[in-house]
Image 1 (cartoon, one colour):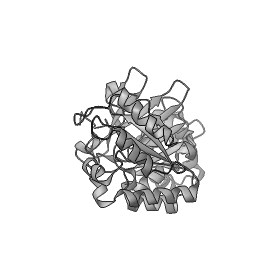
Image 2 (cartoon, helix red, strand yellow):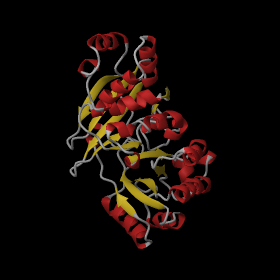
Image 3 (cartoon, helix red, strand yellow):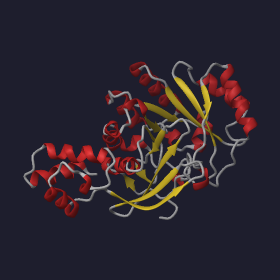
Length: 327
């Protein structure tokens, strides 16, 4: 829902200012269209239905995995593909993985999104409409900006959407924005964001040499600079930074690399999520034995670490697999 366009439309129609809030309140509660907004005049509902699209996105296809994960392929009004995911957990959590761009320009070698064409940044409304789509399915309570794109390259739109999520039932404390370490956006996030939104760093290597091979952005913004900004976030917010580390067989999963990672990261600042690799055609995933040995090194170094539960792999909805393949 384009809330700015909604306000302009209602102003032009001579409607009182509170009408925009009424419409938004209904949308955030998960209604399927203007016709369900029973405290609006019938004529206004009909006019909105005729003249103002309820969503900035169109659903092309939806798939459900064996574990209950749902992946939706949307198209923007100008035809660009966007994928987003609803993850259902046994403890009752309903978490959204939201995209900030159609494609991604940063070409990380292990990520399917980085292998597709980059189209453009998404607007705040287009990001929010991914969440609203799933809210119409069921209540949701967590969100991660870890879908297609680099959120810090589109920080204004990402924050615009993130600040609206509490109205859908997703508090700022349950919202996480991920970055590969795009420093201009990361610095703005640290300096300007007052809400308790969580920060995640997509790291994947303990050295500049290896990280630059896997993630070309590291050539421009090396580890020391990125980690210093994460430390500043912790100092200002008193919140840990989540480190995402995808486990690639024979590439970044050796015990000596685990030791290097433990030496690199301050346990007071960082918590590591080890991510079993979800195949995208470039690498092989680490074995369970290798992941366990890697985690054991981190545990002995008292660096907090968990192994992420993979969701939606059978429909290419897991971490690193979003590529809008039908587009």
